[in-house]
Every structure is written in C-alpha cells, then in structure tokens.
Image (cartoon, rainbow, N blue to C red; front, side, top):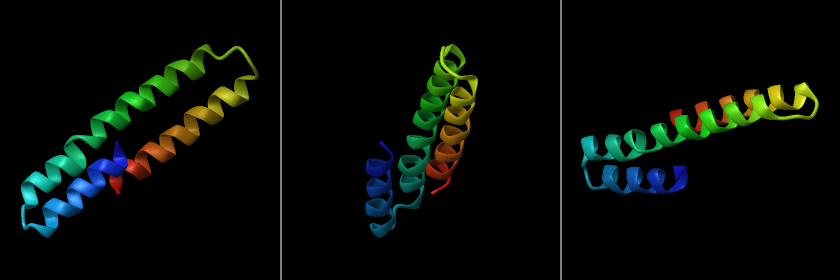
Length: 71
C-alpha cells in the first residue's frame, strides 16, 4: 500500500497536481497504517509467549508505521 501510494504521489506531483497528490500520498496510506498498527497492537496483547516479544512487536510496528506515514 505504501509503495503504491508513494508512486501515485510522485506521478501526481510531477503532473503539477499538488492537492490530489497529498490526498493519494497521505489520505490513503495513513488510515491503512493506523489499521495495521491497531491490528499488531491487539495481536501483541493476546500473544501467549514471552511478554517482551509482544512489547517488541508493538514498539517496532509503531516506529515503522510512523516512518511510513511521514515519508
């Protein structure tokens, strides 16, 4: 999802369509990233193994989704 919205963003920016580019680049990818983060967060809470792994999954996914949402 993030790769396709980035390609769409770049294509629209190169065509001088700034507002549609912002919508495609952020309006589509950020909600997807939020849904993915919520899914990982809930799954980590139900993980039956060592609690450190669940916390690690939460932290890593939060950092990755922040980077993917801002770039």
